[in-house]
Length: 250
Image (cartoon, rainbow, N blue to C red; front, side):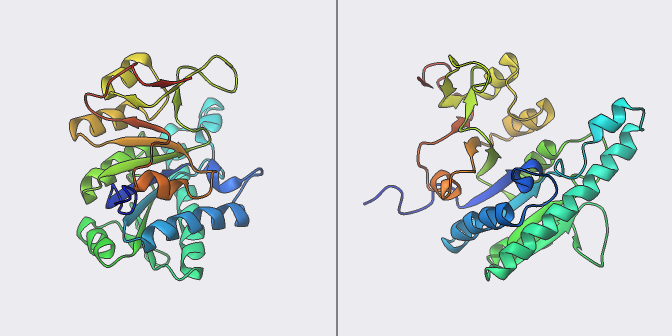
């Protein structure tokens, strides 16, 4: 039997950065958003429960304004609102493909989205709907990485799929260092000790405490979400007791 004929993960939390929505420009690129929706639709139609956490960096970069003197909490709340715009764009793209979806926000805005209610989110997933979580955790000082880890644990996801612009975690930035090599597997503690930029330390600690695997992969390659979900060996897997340093791609 083909080992990839059935999904390895039956419920996943996909983390998409805000920059992914922008394509080569800023704002929300229609074609890029459609491409992401097509990959999500493919996995959802294969019977996998899919939840998504989106960032807002294509619309709002709070750090720049903080450095100019803006209050950190204000900047973070503005960033949360930016994620809602991306979530609605993704929902629209999915719905036009015939994939039912729901946006749930951690900040109440009843006219455009549901409030985040864990049991309601679980029910949507059980009915085959894609659930898109927006507005972070609803609190400043927490990143969307932490949101992804928190929501993944709450909904009982089998893994977090961290979509990036590179095909995994490297020993150094592969765009700057041609000698950089890619890890196939890493342990949570190794990621923290090496200071590798996978997810922030709060998110990583939450995943480690709950033994939740993280798969870092390149979403720009069509079909990669399905490949990861069905267990094909692409990207880098962060999990407990991985054989650290022994599986590095040259």
